[in-house]
Image 1 (cartoon, rainbow, N blue to C red):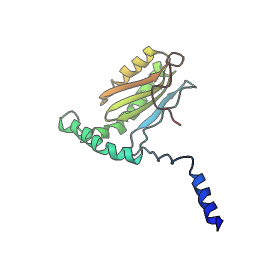
Image 2 (cartoon, one colour):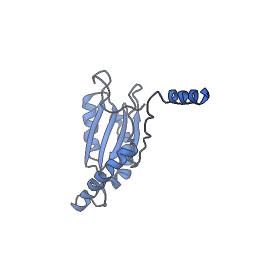
Image 3 (cartoon, rainbow, N blue to C red):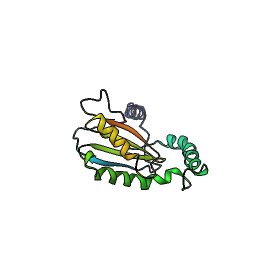
Image 4 (cartoon, one colour):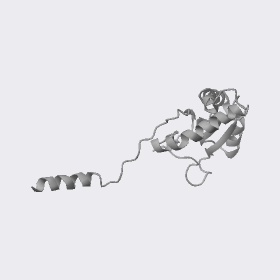
Length: 163
């Protein structure tokens, strides 16, 4: 009769590492792509990943923010998130076409017509120039600069790094 007790103890030990990490997905299909890859040791940013709980928490806010752009007359599409799927390929093409950014490692994320730049550039000035240039792409409402300069930027990357 000790076998059931032993089985119970072994089952408990198998779960002693703690609770499993909740699954995370790009549930909102936010476009996220690597645009350039010239800096070898640039930390790879984590993509837009959400747990089921985070999706539930963000759904209302994303709906409200997305439609307020349209109802206020600032957007032609009924939801500002609908622009992202066409903005990010244009941003990618724009950066790749410009030789001033060929020596960078950059990823771009699109959310609500806001483009977030993540990765590494050669200088702070190059990062500012990239930020200004991306802001010129049609339909881009804003640019968030999370770029690092290897050897200059202190501490961890200014973005969440992929595991």
